[in-house]
Image (tube, rainbow, N blue to C red; front, side, top):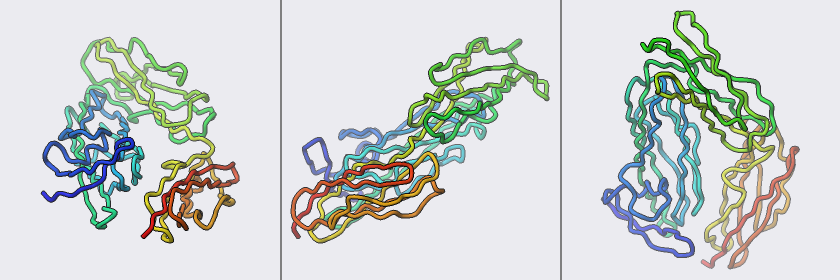
Length: 344
């Protein structure tokens, strides 16, 4: 296997790492461990034992330990029951990101193991050689055929912070053989949710429960993943996932702190960020631009997201720090930009 050298950042110390696949696990697995130690051969996550039809989401944290930008260039689940909800496509040095994986157990009966290879790529700043490594994720779950959820979870989608939501429900159908099976108790986070579980007989004569949740208007900004626990008389407790993405009026992805690496004086480098809002908006102008630091709005995505290209062209050698302000019709956002100019 071909070897290559890349710079690994550890606090304030820079080490040259000779990376070779196969010694323990691929070096791409370090994006998931976040540690400069021998990575495990496989990154594992168990979704647990769940009713058939359950939809569950797990968010992996990614950490770029390397002194170059790394890109996710390929994701190939081995089963259509697994999908990628969202992920950070580019990771700058020392930047954290995420990979959100979803399983739909309506397509699974019994035990399931799924392989999810994820390929990362970077470019050597001196030789311009592209190097790649593929992380190996192993995802497992057990789907109970005697319990079915329709739909697989309660998902409020994207909502603005402070919003009062309409109730959302799923139907639990019991298809087992335990006499007088029932839900004895429902527990949940009362600060975030109001929940009811109402029994009924379905059209096919099977016992059903309508599980209904209402999200608190005080839910904090961020990705919400709450669990409702259903305690049953067969001593096999069930969970219902309640998901929402609570948006601030304005935010920036992946970060409002942009750190350019060494840029030769007179040359230009650019980074893209995404301005995201809880409703449709327009960028009016970008203040603070100079000859060295410029910015320009890009493509709008559905009216609620818009790309912005941030560019730096240092005129002198040394560290440069600057602030740009993106002014929209919903308010303003500051972007801190730093770069180091180097001689040819």
